[in-house]
Length: 284
Image (cartoon, rainbow, N blue to C red; front, side, top):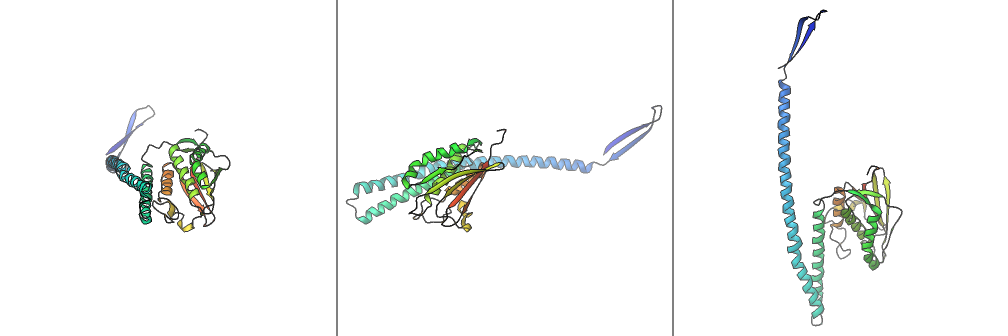
């Protein structure tokens, strides 16, 4: 029970009456006890979940180390030996034997690329991502400079249109996203067509959208969500190289940076991939 009392006084200030009210607070006390119990249970569950996540991360790190070292070692051996076989014994091997050795070498290279892409995918979100203001213009220029040998090799015409503003992002992760987008833009074109890629940006309220437009083969609308899933490929490895991890990595990276990714495309008319990131506010 909980009680309240009020003293009534006369004109001389003398107490003449005491008014009291008693209230049953059993329900309130039960609710408070239930709330304390719930908070205790939630804290226990959070601690258990945190411990589980730490254990999972340790297992993932151990798996990543094993894949990076133990699995890639035999692949490197396969690649090296098949290459040596082709270089040193091509003149004594029948044409069929040379072809088999070349296939072994190509398969080892593809498997190694897949492992590297999977390792990169697994690292996204596990590393300490602390977004900060990043010059989108400088980030794009650095990526294009790194990829310039590839541009020369395939005859690509790649350029920045307009000024690219500053965004909030994780620098190395943003570099990886831009690299994958530009690389894909140069890769998925008709064999007889020189790649043409244009990068531009626009501010949309509190967001900045970076566009990567190409003159590639395009994507049918029904496949435009599917391509961002891991291991999803629309074309055979013989037609266009790749592991089916690149766009999934971009989506995962953008989610961890508080951004998003999408595409506008029509078959035969090229594609316009975009990423959205927070813009820099006046106080940052």
